[in-house]
Amino acid sequence: MKTHSDNTLMSYSQAAARLLRQQAERLFPFSTQPQRPNRLQSHVAWSLRHDGHIFVFNKPLDIDVTYHNDVWVYANDEFRLVGQGETKDEALADLSEEFAFIWDEYTQERDAQLHPSGKLLKQKLLDLVRRIHE
Image 1 (spheres, rainbow, N blue to C red):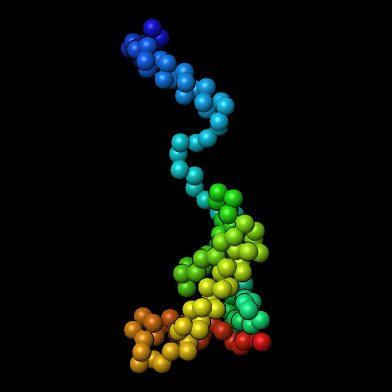
Image 2 (image 1 turned 180 degrees about the horizontal axis):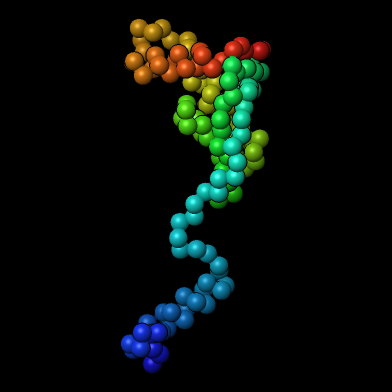
């Protein structure tokens, strides 16, 4: 029988399980802890392009860039936007598509049809976008 460092006895089944776990970790290195995304950088966007439209901003849009499980993630907390892709360009394009979607949904809607939080979002969008080039 093997012993733990605290001098208590370890059963044969515990020793065998430990040995198998050590061998598996050598053959297939992995972490049993959940992997946390690697926050790489912040990206500042003065414009976003989607479907032939360029949204030009009055102020920069802050975008957090992370890479996790082979996926690039671009996220903006202010508007709750998330874009992801296998490349940075794909992630930015996905985020741009989400921005264009909320722009169309909220700025095209009459205020009477919007919840107060929707009206606030609409005003934030209108304040952000200086112009749209087509």
